[in-house]
Length: 397
Ligand SMILES: Cc1ncc(COP(=O)(O)O)c(C=O)c1O
View (cartoon, rainbow, N blue to C red):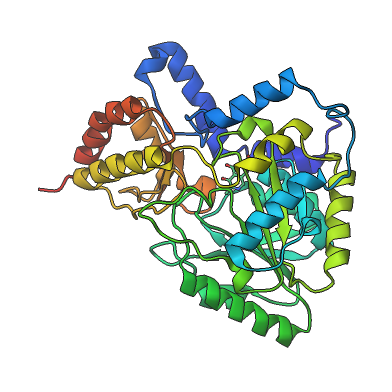
């Protein structure tokens, strides 16, 4: 065999999300698509806003000379300028276009940020449960993730983060609203995290970077206001995309924003631009850069997800499931009634319900439901969820 040993090893631990999705495809072939309740993948069911489609058509009808050519690795300056204006409005900080580097989705942005910051053996601290691709992204750049547990309600456990920070720590990476739990970190925890990182950076005489993965930043419910990490820690990089808020995951468009207060900022930006080039992205997709720039204050209809959250959460609680009410993203992460989350997920599968075992996100004994699907699929799954709950004696009297 000629492929890399490391890749071979990674392949043998294939992602649970993908595994369940593929098993779901088999079930769909056997029982018909409408008879399978597929909550395995976080693939938004909404179409992008009509304004985006209109802009796309207008660009096709009135092309701009050179719009398909190479560009600066950081992206179009007009797009970055518009993003900088938006970030200034949101944070009150003096963002300029140079502080924004366009990325090939949040995944591309995280790889670029890791490549720019990590040296061999450096650690990225990640609260768990977590988006497991982080492990591979860090390893792509010679780094390693170090997991720290969150509290029972999946809020940040700062004592655990503090314990984990050491000589090898280069980055603390937080994802809010979170995949897989849907939990959004409150102002106090981000403020305290900022203080902790200032203190630890001082004690260790080096800069620890805070990377915030905010792919779901605009998908929040109950009118909560998300804190802005830029306001609490100077060495912050936000990585985000329009995969979820504008329903464009296949178009691969996102960006990295570096706090204007970050020290040695020019060097950091040069490193991000270099990483974009040499990781082979070269630049983020040209057409999408033009289209998303004016849409910073738009998103898909978030109410649509909020209604589904309410519907699903209420039903699960009524059936007796133990689940934290999410405040964002489009995931629920209930506790399985038995320790073996894989066995429980198989039980749901026997009712043609596809979910993902919690161990796929670093937390055994739980399972993830992605509810970015049609309402009728959610409602259709309720009898199955109820039967399984009854089997395990979970149903409330
Ligand atoms: C937490 C989190 N980060 C990053 C990504 C990657 O997003 P993108 O498709 O924009 O690369 C995802 C995708 O599901 C995600 O859930």
